[in-house]
Length: 221
Image (cartoon, rainbow, N blue to C red; front, side, top):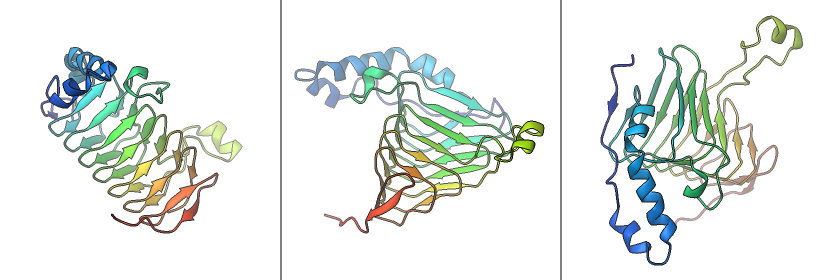
């Protein structure tokens, strides 16, 4: 996809009725909506070259680093929170979405939300519908640099890569780190501060470094 082949649909309405109803008790929510409305032209410019469905929202400006021969696609109602005021957890930097090699692909389903943090892709990151990513989490399919010191000196960017798959309805807690080659099953919960280096079963809860299953199933209500 080249720079001119974007399919960036309309953002969400400038001021939602729900936000206006909440303004009486939580006025900062209305302030966030007003600021979001004011930056829509800049956000649209920042997202150019991406294919994004209707209803997107940016609270603060994300950082997009797209290789010209790569692809970034997202479904409807994408929500990126990059300003500290947009979330009480206080993202410490903007959302960064980066594809770094030819042929790299990030695909995101409907109703994706992310606060601060990074998606960094050298090969492929696939994210399903209704995935929420907490403040300052990082998802990457690459080691960034070779582990072997001699190879790192001669080919500093020749890192190992492996696709990452995150299925529907996954919740990723704040400051989590999801590394290459991982599949996270539908409905799983990644606890805050996890380092995920192996597959996560559907509807389970993982915690720790390295992340381990601490609960086998989450019952539907």
